[in-house]
Length: 364
Image (cartoon, rainbow, N blue to C red):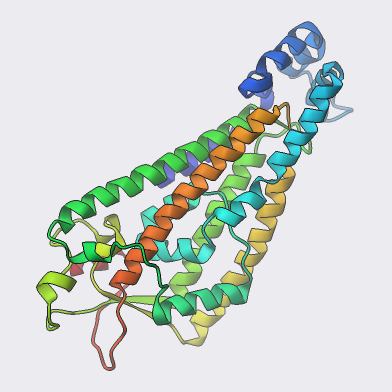
């Protein structure tokens, strides 16, 4: 439900009317721009609000005169600050790339916990640049040995109060990721609905489309991992210490709603058939191209936003960074839990393949 709500909110921004672009801006220059519109640019602004389109000049005949009039009234010092702010905003995709989770990391979380993985992808519009062979190598390394993440949470797997810890950690994860999603969606709304992009001033879909593009890339990463990796649970009842170490939580709640560290022991296996290999490498190639396009498009859109003070630009960068860091923290926590629950496959081991969360629930 939360994921559908996120997509619906983005679609609403894309379909919104562009006649409200000048109604409100970020606090830094909102009063300044509103005074200019009211006192110096009332005529072109009235034409814009009335939607008096000049068919000869095209759709930009509405918004361009308003932009030109406002910029003519700007002091030179403000214009210099506007250029600096545009540079800062244009660096957002590059900044987020260095701190955000990779497609493989998000896909690994999404493979075990689909809802949380989707929310993470929506709350962090940053996709780290990754070549096709890097994606394949990262998947293979995790499947064959697990990523050595030491966060000190493996002891929670067999602690006496693990049920309480599972609920508390799960709630904390969803609160953190939900806050990140809300922050990103609010920014997409503000920067789409109450901002003007110089490269296409008559449109408002730029920032929402960039935000949605990151989520789609992460979803494609989950699909690539799904056709390449199979998850199997391990019947550990015959193993020593089953009751204290390996026994999963006794609950009817689907496993995807609990942190990975509390889920049943699992084995990751690579699918070796030609069909899965073909689709895996095809999807990873598409992902690599998609990441490049998403970063280039984001740089173009964000660097072209007008009428933002430098202070406002830094606040925007800070909000995006906060969401990316929050989502990455949850990703690292989940990967540490998956590593704790990961076991080596045994020869001739019989186990039931898991294909969705219903299969996981049956093993609980």
